[in-house]
Amino acid sequence: MNAPVNLDALGNPWTTPIDQIDVSDARIFQDDVWPDWFARLRRDDPVHYTSDSQFGPYWSVTKYKDIMKVETNPQVFSSAAGITLLDQETQYKLAMFIAMDPPKHDVQRLVVAPIVAPGNLATMAATIRERAAKILDNLPRNETFDWVEHVSVELTTQMLATLFDYPFEKRRDLTYWSNVATTNFKDPNALVKTEEERFNELKKMAGAMLGLWNERVNAPGGNDLISMLAHGEATRNMDPMEFMGNCVLLIVGGNDTTRNSISGGLWALNKHPEQYQKLRDNPGLIPNMVPEIIRWQTPLSYMRRTALEDYELGGKTIKAGDKLAMWYISGNRDPDAIDNPDQFIIDRARPRQHLSFGFGIHRCVGNRLAELQLTILWEEIMKRFPVIEVVEEPKRVFSAFVHGISSMMVRIPG
Image (cartoon, rainbow, N blue to C red):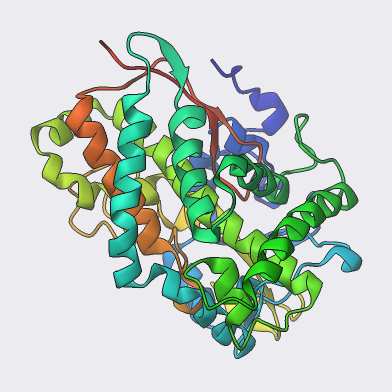
């Protein structure tokens, strides 16, 4: 079990002076106490200024409608300074199309979009089903094992290897690089401790990907991400930092959302046994349950924008140059936008009305692939296992950006 939360260290969400609240503190996510902190901000200060944090001063946008205003106004709220609150050292700043504004964002995004076109997804479905079945059939019965390691990581990493056409036997490289890219340096177990260490590890990733690029750039266009980047008019002349940045983006985007939704979905069903029973009674609810899992988990807690000009939002004046976090995890629990948002409801009437994939020009390009993987996995789970028991509280990632589960011990009754 996780250690009890020390409220003296974190403070009490309902009594802490509002100007002292800093929801970028990774401990509130690791200790899973974030809901009350965001409920307090939505109630008392929906557009909230934090003057001092690990990441410097920033604004928190916590209501669904205000997040949508920011998302749909890229002319004022730019992605070009980065998508996390961390201000990287200039020499390590990685360009990536999610951290660009139009028009460059649009043409680079279009290069990789075909990998998740409907025809390609239909082709991938058989591969996903075959792999999911194999992973599930190899799980032990009547003994405790880590669901994250054996299922969530394994299925998503196999899929990533396919998307990049990366050597299958080296696929865990991709998991490692994704973890390095998103690690919080204050985590006692951080894989890297400085921006320089992170950059050096990601250079190894860029070297491996560049080797694949060089093999494929003169070959006929393939159906994998590296071939698409190598042959795309908007991407084939990228500088090294841009190439590295886009590889990081595609690895993290293809890894964290799905991996943490696979874990979060099983945890949600265990926490809501009446919903698990509803699923057993009617497995046809799986396609409706999947977006509800993604809302409930919200695998990336926020995205950052930087104001290009002064702008009034929620009665506050955001100044040009200010950075702000659109807290998707809070918007997804906003009762003014979503009915009973604190309840996990697998037959929810409008399950796709969530912010987990973002909105507008930066909406996650792989959202349908993430849903497809989860749908197929749950179809295969329900064919085999009426119940999978989570036997202790999950361990969570030390991060305000990736809302993830690092370990979750489960047992499948024999």
